[in-house]
Length: 126
Length: 140
Image (cartoon, rainbow over all chains, first blue to last red):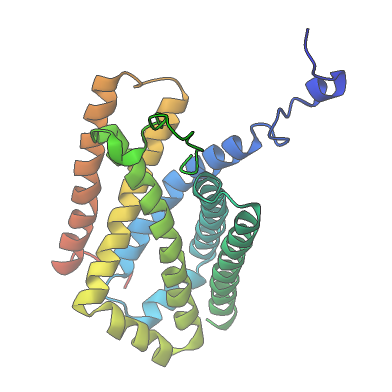
C-alpha cells in the first residue's frame, strides 16, 4: 500500500517537490552550450591580437552580438544550476544554503547585466 | 557523520569512507575536475564581462584590460580558462552520452576519462599555438 496521496502521484514531483526539472534544465542548457562554446572559442581566437576597433566591429554585427548574448545568458543559467548542486552537496546548514544561493545568483546577475549592457552599448554606438 | 555519538566502553562505530579513503581512479578525478572547472568557468564569466564592458567603455579601459591580459600571469590565467572550457565541454558531452545510457562500464569510463584529459590540454594548447604563431586574429 502506498502512503502517497493521489494528488502527489499525479503531480509527479517526488520528495524534492521539484521533480526532475533541475536535471533537465542542466542537460538542455549544457547541450546548447556545446555549439555556443565552440563558436566562442573560434571567435576569441579570431580576435586574438586584440585591436580595439575589430572587437567593436565583430560584436556590432547582429549575429555575433546575439550569439555572444546567448552564450553569456545560457552559461550563467547553467552556472547557477551547477553551483546549486555544489552548494546542496557541501553546505549542510539551511541558512548557509540560502546565503550562498543568493550570492551565486547575485554574481550571475551582475555578470549578465555587465555583459549585456556592454553588447547593447557596442551595437548602439558602433 | 563526524558527530556520530560514540557509546562509552564500545569501540568506535564504523564510518562510511569518504573522498580521501578511496584509491583515486580516472573517473573519480574526472568527476572532481568537472566540478572544479565548472566553478572556475564561473569566475571566467566575470573576466568575460570585464572584457566586454571595457570594450564598451572605450579605448583606455580596453587597453588596461589588454595590458593585464598580456602579462605572463594574465596569459597563464587565460590558458587556465581555455583549458577549463575545453575540459568542461568535453566532459559535459560525455555526461550527455552517459545520460543516454552508453559508456558506463568501468573500462570504457576510465579510458574515456584519460582521453578527455589529454584532449582538454591539446585543444587550448592548439589555440595558443595558433594565436602565438599569428594564425589567430582572422577577424581583425
